[in-house]
Image 1 (cartoon, rainbow, N blue to C red):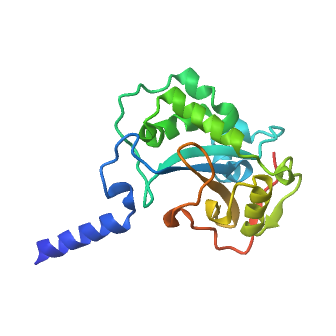
Image 2: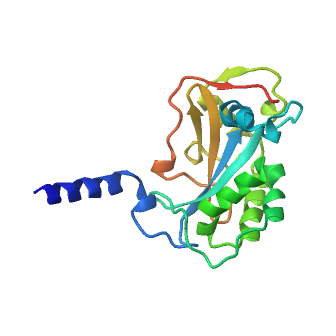
Length: 215
């Protein structure tokens, strides 16, 4: 009986923990992407300042940076896939600093998510650039000179107004505590806007989030 109970608990843990562990991930087998855009000032306050991250230095003028481009299933996501593609060089990863804030983040995202894309490292990094270039950041967030509190729905609406192909079902805002964390946009494998699957559509439940001023 104890062995059966253990098996049931283990099975329940696997099923409830997300489809990322429900099947063996295979590079190139996924349904769509999530482009994750991180509000740089929030990341700096939570993590970057303690690391003396260059993107957090005063005068950088950074608002949103790409956190990642994540392959997704319609339910769950793959990660840490095996691939025959070679890993990017340090120089190739460092060259992503202008889009992602640091070469270290680019390398980490390749390891965890990029290998599941089925693309080469160069192709994955280019896909990140293409997705970022196709997604226009609302001008209202440029050079934000003071801390503001904004309803998540207003942030979504600003992105939709600026990117008319986006819909409410294709974008979500996440928070960490009271701070704006990320804006996540769902894209087809061809980097066209699409609706997010239900498990990727979890918005921040706070009435408003803090957007710290751009540094």
